Amino acid sequence: MTNVIKLKFKRGEEAKGREYTYYTSCPVEIGDIVEIDKGKLGIVTAIDVPEEEILQFKEWAKTIIGKYIPQEEPKIVNSDPKNII
Image (cartoon, rainbow, N blue to C red; front, side, top):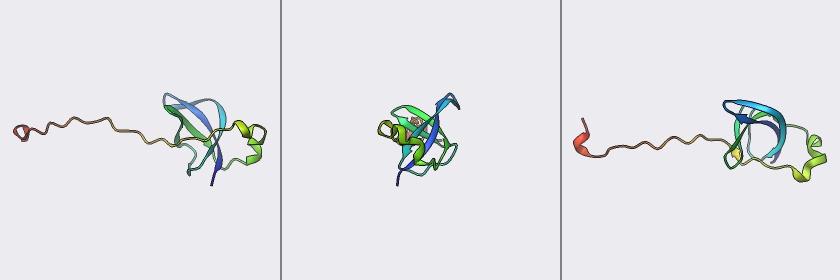
C-alpha cells in the first residue's frame, strides 16, 4: 500500500520551509523523521493526503526511502583483559 504524505525538510532540529508531497510505502505518523534521499531528512507534517492533491504532478512525485533510524556512533571497547577491573 502506498500513501501520500506531506513533509518539510529537516534543518537542524526543526522542519523548515514549504511542504512537499511524497509517496510512502511504510507507515508513518505526523512528526516522524523520514529519509527522503540519501542523507536528506524530512519531518512528516500530514498523512493520508488525498491522492487528488498530487494528481497534477503525479509523474514527478517521489517516494521516500523510509523512516529515519539514527545510527549509534561506534564505540571502541578495549578488550585487553588486563584493563578489566
